[in-house]
Every structure is written in C-alpha cells, then in structure tokens.
Length: 413
Ligand code: LLP
Image (cartoon, rainbow, N blue to C red):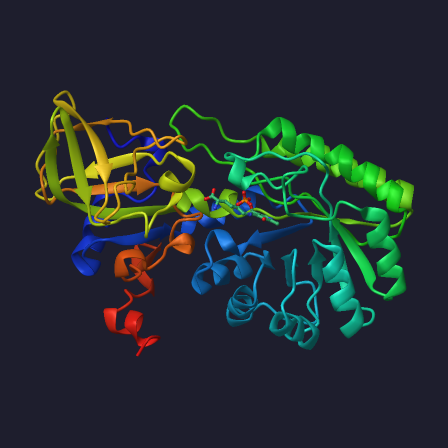
C-alpha cells in the first residue's frame, strides 16, 4: 500500500516540515490543486462555489481571485463571502435556501443579494418586504441522486426546491419579484447518468415557465475519484450537453442566458488532506484497532455516510517502509463513542484496510478531505477545532489556528 502517485498532492517532505511547525492534527490544502480545478470549469459562463464544502475565508479568497462567484446558504455564509471580498448589489453572491429567517432577510435586502428560492413561503416572505427583489427558482425536477440518500436533493423525499411551479410563478407575479434564473441541483456526489438527465428537465421547465431569464444553473453534484480506480468526470462532455441545452432555451425564450455551475466537492475535495498521528495500536481478539488523534468530530463523512477516504502513512522516524510486510487494521479516533471508526461502510459495518507495519507515533493521512471535511467539524467530546494550513508556493500559511479550550468554553461562561 504505497502512497499512490495520483493521490500525492503535497509531498512527504513538505508534510513532515508542516508537522514540525503545527504538530498534528491539522488540515492542509494545496493552493495549486484548487486553482487547477477552477480552470477545468472555465468554459461555463459562471462558476459559483458552494462554500458549504469548505468555507474558510482564505479559500473563498482564492475562489474570488480566479473569478468564481459564491453561493451562501446561511447568514454566516453571507458574512463569510462579504469578508472574503465578494460584493452585494451584484451577482457575486446568491443566497440559496428553502427558508429565510428574519435576520437573513434583512441582510439580503440591505446588500441586494439575489435569492434562490426553494419554497412558496419564501416567495411570500421576500415579496412582502422587498418589491422587485431579484430571485431564482430552485426547481425540484422530481428525481434526484447522491452518493448517499442523505445527499439526494430531488424527488418526493427531498425537502428541497419548488414542486408547484405554477403556484410559484403566480406568487412571483403577485409580489412583483424579478425572476432572473432557474436552478436545479439533484444531489451531491450524483451519478453522471442522472446529472445529464437534469438538462432535459431544465429545458422543459424553462419552456413551460416561458419568461425571459438571465441565468440557468446546473447546480453542483459533480463527484471526484475517491478510490484509486475511479475515473474523473468528463467535464468537456458535461459542458457540451449543458451548453446545448442553454442554446435551446435561449432560442425558445428569445433571450440570452448565462450558464452557471455550482460545485463544492469538485473544486476543493482533492486539494485537502488531514494529518493525524497514531496514539495507540490495540489488539482486540483477532482485530487491530489503530487509534489516531482525530475523530468524527473532525472528519464525519465516514461515520455519517460510510464515505471512503484513501489513507496513507508517514513514519515518524524516517525509517524505510517495507510494503511487503503488511497488517490489516481498523482506523478509529479518540471519541467516547464506538462508532468513531473511519473504516466503516454505509451500513456501519466495520472493515479493515491493509497497511505496512506501523508503530505508535507514525502519521496517518486521510486524502481528498478538502470538501465537507473541516466545514463539517464540531466540538463533540469538547475537542477544539484543529488548524487549517494552506500550502502555497512551497510555503505554509496558517489559515485557521487551533481553537483553544478557553474559546470553546467562553460561550457558556
Ligand atoms: N448547490 C446546492 C444547492 C447544494 O445543496 C450543494 C450541496 C451544492 C451546490 C454542492 O454540491 P457538491 O458539488 O459539493 O456535490 N456533506 C455531504 C455533501 C452535502 C452537500 C449539500 N449540498 C458530503 O460530505 O458528501
């Protein structure tokens, strides 16, 4: 089990240097990889980064620098976007949700931020307070897909998006809201076959609505190869089919339209690694548990969805690793909860992975954690948030320091 070349974004020497400065654990992102991923999508008229995947302000600044716009799904995410330099009164930020709380409503009105509407109640709430507000309609295309049923956002089991489009259009008219775009997002980590089907739904709905609009959005959902044998998505082909759909809609509605894409995972997942250290190697009957200093409070994806993350090791003492001498181990964290296991499937079944002979103090590295890694962390078991480090031009930049226990407790004191 070598560190596979494909997965090696930041080399061993650099990781060890970073460990010297920041100890472990910490998240580390590769600037170059993020930039490379943005440029892969440049054919789309607008790339709108779904910041929920990695909401660090410094990552948002990279997005801004390379021309990406931003999606915000909460008041906190709007504030983050503003802090990173995205502006109100323009198309920089779009607020997407199925509800809008009073404080958020005040903010989107003050900064004139377009709202991507996911419920009839939202139309009424915005309509009563902000005449002519620019809105998008997030349409539930009546089917969805995702890498897990928790990330499927279409069909009748999903709380997301507008189902009754006729009613929505009537209310938009009643409240004089300005419909500027149509949006469909069927789920995260969606299968390519389903993603492609969204084009036809978009064409159908646009023609049915029959109003001049400025934008259509393909949503996010694009996956990345988490496993070594998995292939990358064919972006050229994906763009081609969406661009064709855009042209059909432009012709039918007799207006010019910009094509947006709204990825999170695709832009940042591969840029991120999580560096942890082995604290204990425990034998339990015929099993070997390797316990590291990160838990599901840091990286929740394996526990929540059974998600797979490639794992590699880095010896603490520079010893040469013998890859023919291996053991089968279960990787777990420090939390006082037996489900705190990184090697588990969607049905919570634990599996083993094969590693070379390891010892306490060696480093365990989780790969492709740039998306929904740090942004989904919590303080469970009262463990502070760990640092985030950006690797740029052979330098390390600490873009989030470690939270202190004092800070963690301060809200209660
Ligand atoms: N647009 C909307 C409206 C979304 O709800 C999402 C994700 C995205 C775009 C970006 O999706 P992406 O391109 O990243 O697949 N925590 C889960 C993923 C939940 C995604 C929620 N919405 C995970 O760790 O896999």
